[in-house]
Length: 136
Image 1 (cartoon, helix red, strand yellow):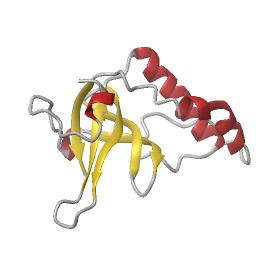
Image 2 (tube, rainbow, N blue to C red):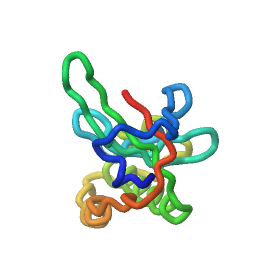
Image 3 (cartoon, rainbow, N blue to C red):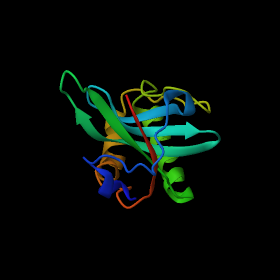
Image 4 (cartoon, rainbow, N blue to C red):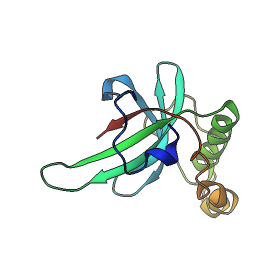
């Protein structure tokens, strides 16, 4: 199932639901009252995660995320974008660092956004396969 097909739907039973002890969030890519996107690790493999549904009712509150497989090229691009975020904006969205960040360059956050905003807003993983999901 592709990411674009899973939005605002209940994941099929055949799609694995991961518990918190099965994955580790590495960094957050977007945040709005909670993580919206980012990279997580399952075993030795890295995946994109993305918020696909929220339910705010008192009796059934949840945020549901898709775990999305990335190609080697897509993952490399995500590392490059994230390293620029660390370099020009900071490390405040790093949850579990797997390698040392680049040297921080102060007062250059505009450099990051001018360079990467179009890519970030392009939803580059809509046609990627979802390998699982989780809720928080």
